[in-house]
Amino acid sequence: MSDQSVALLFPGQGSQYQGIGKDLFDAHEIVRETYIEASDTLGIDMQALSFDDPNGEINLTRNTQPVLLTHSIACYRLFQEQGGNSLQPAMAAGHSLGEYSALVASGALSFPLGLSLVRKRGELMGEFGEGEMEALMIDLESATRLAQQHYCGIAACNLPDQNVVGGRPEDLEQLTQTMAELYPRKRSARLKTEGAFHTYYMVEAARRFRPVLEEADFALPQFSVLSNFSGDMHDNDLNSIRSNLFMQLFNPVLWHKNLLAAGDAGANIMIEFGGGLGKGETAAEKRPNLESIVKKTFRGNDAAPAYHSVINLQTLDDCLAAVA
Image 1 (cartoon, rainbow, N blue to C red):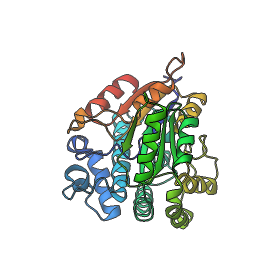
Image 2: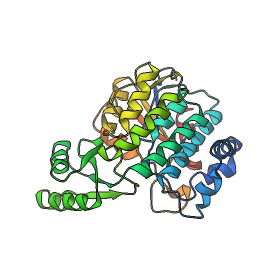
Image 3: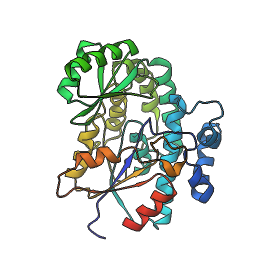
């Protein structure tokens, strides 16, 4: 359809799980090629890490980031192949690590370079960062006030009433106790991350990552990519893209603003690629990471974009039937 304006979406950390990608790997050659390319690029066995995780290391940041980027790009490549490349994206956005997947999909980064960058990014975040993260189901003003009282920082703005803070475990414990007293009907949840990402706890990691970004061979994206740091589209300038990725490491992810900007830019279809959430152990039992946030963002909007996902075999078939 000529009136389709498609936004590609890519999830971030927290959507990894043991066995991620295996259903697609077993069924499709292009996925197998993607995983082999990732293994060759990084010198690690991406299949073993993703599918078996024999040493329980998939949740280490240095591993999580390339695992998710590989799965996301495998899902995207497979969708394009199965759809005959009939669907041309207008824009892309990714949550935190997902911004790198978006840049790979746009051609701003080659897949091998994207893998190398997120591997190094993850190593630095794990080595030089500290702390944990907590999702608070309260408004940004209230979350900011709590963070300021307890030496914490705002890490992500996902929805008007869902904001993430980061800090040392003991500070987050004090923060959640204060929150329970002030907002007894509101809830919070600890996130499975290896540090207080996107807060001042990541400044040293960002400082060490800057020269890596400056030396990386970026290209101008083939379609617009949204910046977590600014909340709007990246400028068509390579130095600006590098700078925004540097700033993204220790500033909040403005995800709600990203989604609204995509809607304002005319996106009427949003497709999420990669990752998965849920207590079930198999890929078929997982649900998309960003679906709830996307749908809540546009709830009540008569022009709400249609949402689809490609995270496993079933969602691939469903998405192709709906849009290809």
